[in-house]
Image (tube, rainbow, N blue to C red; front, side, top):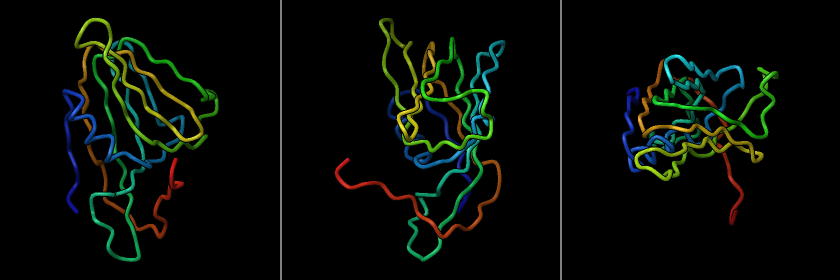
Length: 145
């Protein structure tokens, strides 16, 4: 599978990136907010869903998400001092604010944790930054949840 490089400038684009990042795992220490640049970054090991996974083995790749035009970052359910804590990303969503195109991008994590990014607009870059590696485990989700 070729490496992915995607840009999101609206909610439709963001839905594609969210699907690519579903079940990505990362450590708290793999996130950064560069207030001066107004950029939030996240490095994660993403599960390669787009590969079809027809065989008995699966693949993960190292990827980076860069959210631009960030005014503020807030989190719930995350101990920012525990940099080695591992999180699983379930989805990336956008909620419009009172004045378009501003709003909030939320990174929804397992266990109910959330990272909320207040943004001027949707401007996101996503890219694989390394080769893939084999994993025998495919993420599973409870049925009916």
